[in-house]
Image (tube, rainbow, N blue to C red; front, side, top):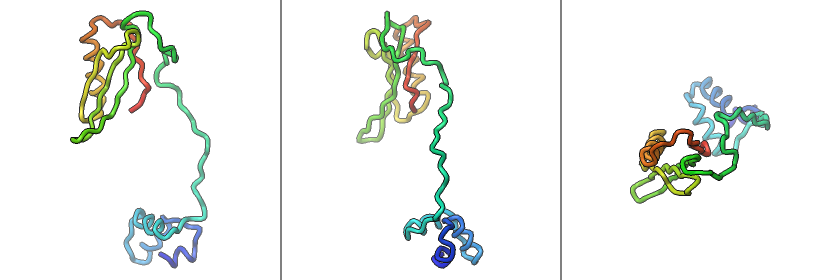
Length: 143
């Protein structure tokens, strides 16, 4: 591989893996990458990066629009998931908070962060609060 890199330093690890295979030495690209990384062998051509990030349209309308006030209970709820490390591993809690009273109206705890965690927290809040028709649930759209 050293000879191939010395002869053609403009090529990267993929080319070097191909050269090794052509010489009868089976090699995965990941192995070639590791060897190149260990020796500081990099292609003189870098990857082209656009620099432009295209942000897609929002998935849902932002009904709260950073106006974090509510006129009455059960008008706006906020939800978030938090990770807590314990001696036995990670625990995840999803809490639903009423913006008017600033109280937690529902929650769910699990060792795995799945969509069911949020669904259980929301179901818990609805069961405790009763009639919540028209209530807005606002999240940060995180994991």
